[in-house]
Length: 339
Ligand SMILES: C[S@@+](CC[C@H](N)C(=O)[O-])C[C@H]1O[C@@H](n2cnc3c(N)ncnc32)[C@H](O)[C@@H]1O
Image 1 (tube, rainbow, N blue to C red):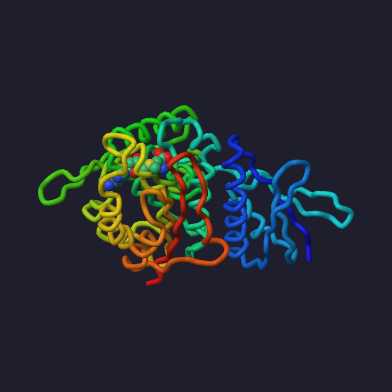
Image 2: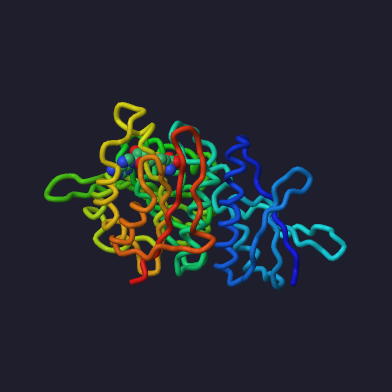
């Protein structure tokens, strides 16, 4: 058996930092399982920092690369017999640029580390591998945090939101980012109609890391549009993604009138979930985060199951409820489309 330990990424808020240890442990467990590695991670405090440690059969490069996705882990070390720490990875390389999801700051943005964690849980629960050319859909994408993180994995992304101004900001920002970094790209607009009326304008980017890649068609895609979640069936008639990842409205700052519970969060989710399930390829997975003060966890999981998904359980997918701020305690539900 080999000994490993991973240093946790620090968070500025110490109360949230304490909460992230359990998320980090779940994330590492999910990634280890995905790589076919049996191990149980435990928390350790060394030199005043939080670590996760585990023993396992020596990890192969593919397993190390998978753990490299971990949002909460900063560096993974192998601990040698004499107690020395040999670094195995730092940051995994971003397809476009590590700063892509970080630059935009706005009220209501989902924390990038948490978003990356959600994406990892969906990915680990799915039957797909990182090399499968995945497409990630966030049906409530705001300005596109999930999409930008997915693109940096070298995957494709679809981002939709009912807030047209948020989507516009996301599109404008991404276009500027590509221009600033001189990344070859195209941006096309496509008007979609439903029942003879315009349902949405899809804005689709095609881009690559180098002009040579672009020329030979080795490109990635991002499509964004302002569409209410339940209306996506007007745009996509068949499965279009392998992963659905979304941080649902907390019913706090997005509520009309501010500070009050959004009137029909449950109804909206009840209507939207079957639509989202139809957009997932078989073997695909969905990870949703939500405020337990406005949506009851057992109700969310019940609705996901009713929509035809298989709810994930076990150490990586349970006990993820955590404090975020006053009035927001967040939970995560992960489920798979088996058929
Ligand atoms: C917690 S925020 C997500 C923020 C996003 N992850 C980001 O970092 O920008 C929830 C989002 O849900 C959107 N939303 C609320 N109701 C919606 C609906 N019925 N259809 C589509 N989007 C909706 C809001 O506009 C908001 O952007």
